[in-house]
Image 1 (tube, rainbow, N blue to C red):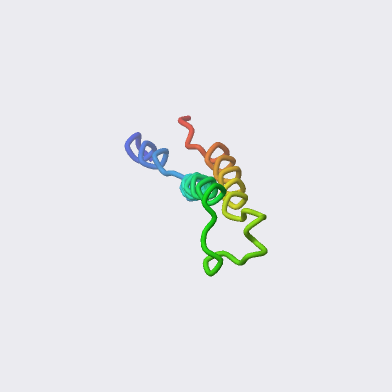
Image 2 (tube, rainbow, N blue to C red):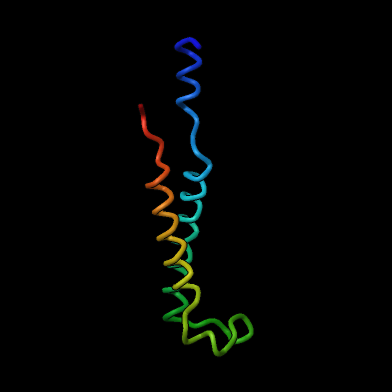
Length: 80
């Protein structure tokens, strides 16, 4: 294996890194949406009435952000 092939192989990225970035992005969008819904609740036909007090959009955004941050940091491509 020559130098050029080793540079190409070291440039490969883990699929889990991209999954982490995607989860992080979706989580941040859901957190913003959850805060908006917290102050302006959606109509009852969109969100079931008994779920309104639990704020599932906000909590799901927090969960996705935490897992996305973990995956992004854990599988961040390192130069070696």
